View 1 (cartoon, helix red, strand yellow):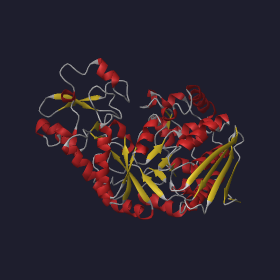
View 2 (view 1 turned 60 degrees about the vertical axis):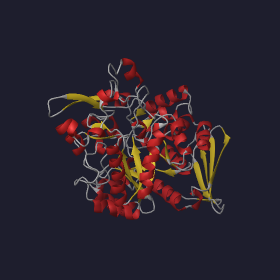
View 3 (view 1 turned 120 degrees about the horizontal axis):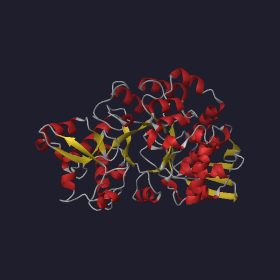
View 4 (view 1 turned 180 degrees about the horizontal axis):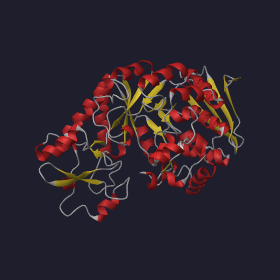
Length: 473
């Protein structure tokens, strides 16, 4: 599955379709199309209206054309919506007379008199160094605070109220009507707030929410993918409830394994991982550190972080700091190719391991083209995550796809797409013949096809075979 913005591989979705048809036939089967709705911030993640396509990107017809040839994943920001949305603007204009007043979490109603206290605020799992509240000035001359976890344009929704639940139901149905196969629930773990808690993955209420949303998804014929960046045990818990999950631990564990030339930690994680998941090495956000905690020791995490800054191409600590608008201290901003020092051999091995890991590999568009860190875009915008958000022109893509590392990656992904060995109902076996070697064997459910990856994490040499025959990449 390719992850891309609608305007990153060319200028719009028509250009994206051209790239898919010209270069990526057989390379990708699914498409995670990052937000293409009108938005007022966070590169699409502050949507104003899910019923519209931003004209700069194209039309619903363009979305449906993409969905015809690729199973399509679309984001639904279940935690928040733009403050410029018609819902919030109606609330600002009509305050307590607005039909949408219950869509938002009003601090004076959430907390009892005399609260929140400093203790209350300290408990909250925050994405910024202050209380996650924003003051709203209403047309009637009054003001009050509402919940605001992320950027200033992203106002949190109260997912417990009927008006918001109707909004969730209608939005999922609308996305499904335009060809969406999977709905990614962005910032899912933040969506439930409960007095006296951290307001992050609040149990059991988070399960009640997921059950309600799944009923909406089932009615519309789509699959849910809850998005959670946190300790690996939380996604595994969701997996045990029968949902697809993300493997956000793999990127850091794999970096450690390639830096150290050791196979034990990687093999341990691959044996734990469920088959019904989407694997990542890179996304539109940074490389998650907290996701791998306890799968790597604190010393190993520290080693990996230091090595990333040492061997990574043009990676600096400041790019992941508040100076570059970084909202998450547990992520490092870099392309994955850059994190591996722009080294082709290390990068191809990383992608080979991702292809053989349990689940479905998602490859971010910059990673698909083995992209280097975009320091110019980073410095022009002072946005840390833009180091990994390069805008490719069609001409640049024509040149980039000719690089040997990209051609070999395309060949690897074509093999991954066509081999029956990677059936999600099949099996996986992971062994470590020695401290630096890993062998990953994937087999079809009926045993008819077996693919094997033999990799030396120290030398970065690897071999792929199918039913005993070497696959040429």
